[in-house]
Length: 300
Image (tube, rainbow, N blue to C red; front, side, top):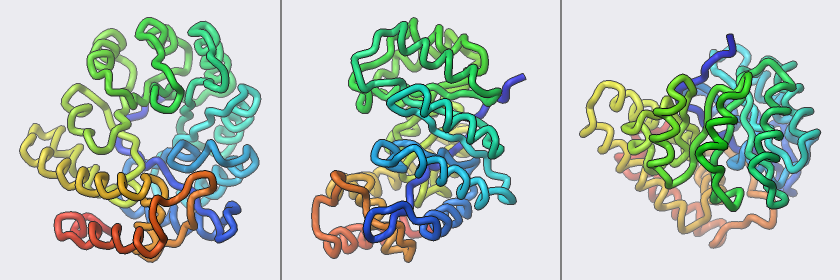
């Protein structure tokens, strides 16, 4: 039976050198840091890892490096393999399977205005390419449009498709889908309102800020599971303080500035993605939030 994945996963970021090239040493250093935080696992090669700005070869190399870093950690690995064309997605999926990854995930194709039938066909072919569980991805802010509820139901019924990463504000749709397909797993993708997704039945989360505040999100999820909503809200407030700071810098450039403050240099984001302020100002901005007591207590 195909494994049903649950839990809290960092949407792993990517290590680049000062010239913007993929850097193995920086990727290893970053991955080792994130693995210390007690998360269920890592979501590798997704939007938080700048996958839309990386080549297939770089993503394949990253898969191997992360697998090596995590081999003795007990962490589960989900490879995001959503690419503009299905052939590259299948190549990355098969490499992840060969490397021992525990699951796959993929954005729907969105280079063109594909029909619902074409999106369903993409997931059907990708799911059939390996025996790994596949997590589909609903993220209208990235793809330009939502996948209709009925189409998502059909996709979740496909062999090897075991769940969905849901990063949409349509929470009624999330609830309906969970009720209609209760055997699927549901990952919530908004870090700053994970509490909402958890209350509505999410089985876990996948997020960018988990790279730095993984311990916090593990505790937030545990408070939810224990029924301690007051504690969960308190922890969500801390998460929001950190996320709000990133709105001034740009999320991924700001995360990399925060990592530099922590002594983990994973480079800058690859152009055209840039900081919204100078490096010095961004690092001072992120240092101020990282040194707030309610945030600092969750750092490793």
